[in-house]
Length: 412
Image (cartoon, rainbow, N blue to C red; front, top):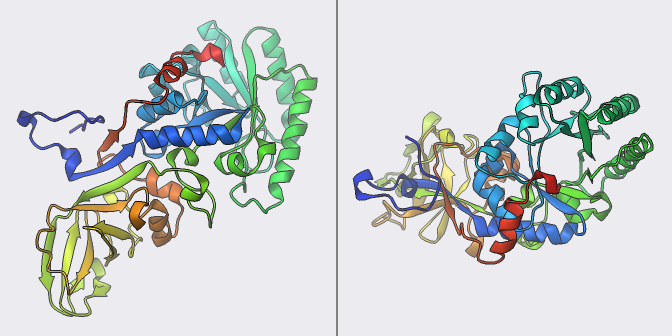
C-alpha cells in the first residue's frame, strides 16, 4: 500500500488513516525557520538546501519546496536520479547532483538542466551527453582538498581545468561552479579546516587563471556555515541544519537557533502486568526487578529504529521511559514500573523523538543510545513509516517562495 504524504483526510471508505498508527511527522515550518536561520548566518552567501537521501528521511519534494519558500537559492542531491525526481515534481530551481557511477544518466541530467558535479573521470561522459542533447552541460568542478573521497586530486587539477575550459570554449559545457567538501568542520578546533580552506583558495585561483569564471564557489557544510565565515564564499551547502539538528557535540539545536523538524511517534499497542523476573524480548537480556507493567511500542528495526539502541527513550503520557530488552523488527518494550498499571495507555501516543520541547526525547538521545550520530537516526527511518507533513502552507513569505520555486535554473 502506498501511503499519502499530505495531511489530507482519509474517507470513511478507506478506513482509518494509517498515518495515525505510526508516522514521522514533518513540520515544514521548522524547515523554513531553519533555512532562514542558516541564510542569516551565511549572508551574503546564498544557501543550497541539501535534500539528498529523501531529504535526510524527511521527504525530498515537500522539504525542497519549503526550503525554496524560505529563501534557499539552490538544491543539492547526491544522485542524478534524486535530481530527476525533483524535476518531475515540477521543481525547476538550480539543482546540483555530485555523486556518480559509470551508469549515471548524464544525458537525462543535461536535458533536465541539472548541474553535474565533476571530479574528473566523468568529464568525457558529460561532454558526450551534451553532444547528444545538443545543449551545453552545467558543470561544477570538484577539488579534493583533504577529505579523500571524490574530487580531483591537486596533482590532476591543472589538467582537469584545462580540459574543461577547452570544452567550454567549444560550447559543450559551462563551468558553473568550483567546490569541495570539509572533513572536520564539526570539530572547529581542528587545524585541518584551515588547510582545506587554503587548498580550496589555491584551486580556485588556478581555475580562474585558466579562464574559468565560476558563478558559485562552495565549500561550507552546516557546521562551517555556523562557525567559519571564511568558508562561505558564494554558496553554502546546508544539510543537517535544515532539519534542525546540531552538528556539534556539546551544542544543542536550541542553542544554535534550530528547530528539529521530525517527530517519530506511534501508539502504545499493549500493556500488561508481569511478575518479578520476567524476561523481555529476544535473548532475555533484561529481566524485571519486581512486579511491573510492560508496554509494547510497535516500532522496530524494520522501521529504521537501531536494533542496538536499547535504553533509547520513549515518551508516553508526559513521562519518558527507556527501552528494555532488545529492539525487534517490528516492536520494542518499555517498563512502566510497579506504580503504573497501564490502564488507559493502549492507544496513547508514544513519541520516540521530536523537537525536545518539555524535556521530550530527541534524535540526539537515540543517537547516544545507538552509539551513532543524529544524521543516521533521522535518515534511516524506513518507508514503512508514513510521513505526515504539517504546516505545508507558508504564512510568512509565500510570495518570495513562489518566486524561488519558479525562478528556473537559469537564475543561478
